[in-house]
Image (cartoon, rainbow, N blue to C red; front, side, top):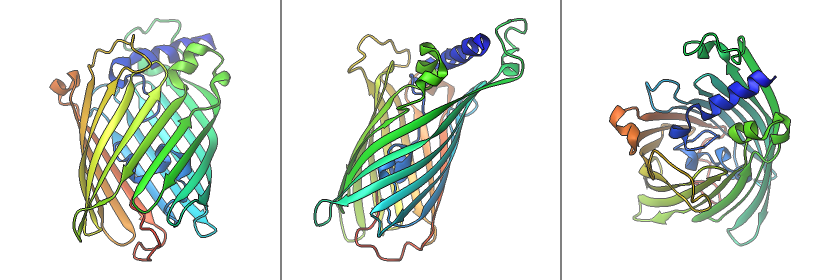
Length: 321
């Protein structure tokens, strides 16, 4: 097994200059599917919702990440209990991560229009390395495994989420268990370390047909700079979202970290549209603002969502978060 340990570590370190230590997949449209960053979000919509997302990061860059997810967000007891199912596959060079999670969230009404939820998700993560993809550099390296090697570890995430009809905020922790199953600290830090997410936003009326949604997300991962997104979205006639997001990082708790990409990362342009009362389509285009910008290897992200009951069924609090 030492061979796979060595090669997984090398794979984890293969692209550190590009991913800035981020181990979990990065999404630009997370504000429209909170299950990607907070299990406490499950059931928020108070109706069934299924969404798939495909992200191709740094297109045409060798070994660049490609991520595909499918999530189902369900609720019961008039929205006071939430359930979620998530499947994810993430390919980076010769390594591939596959995961599956089940989520439960319990929601409590804490004000006339305010709700607070506690969420927990559990499942597994599988890490695979394809040694055949590494033989181009050194075909005689004895540490390169023959074919594919796999390791599986349990996983658990937890989160809290608060919202009313105009504001929301959430805090969550991912990869809370499973590091011990990877047997070595350097491997667990490379593939399965703690992730923390803090997010908040608001919906501000501009006119009868236009609303503005500012929001932010802060990510913290051990061994990486603190990453943050600042987002601004406009909602037109309750059907079309247009906006942008600025992503960067700062050294708060890890001041001694070196970064060859600089502090700037990317700006994303987003569009979401309700094609019908049940179908939602989204697209995000990420433009690099670091050393990768000269290579024009930008990122594309497409999402498709389906409401199990039509969106024109009126709810007490429209679900715009």
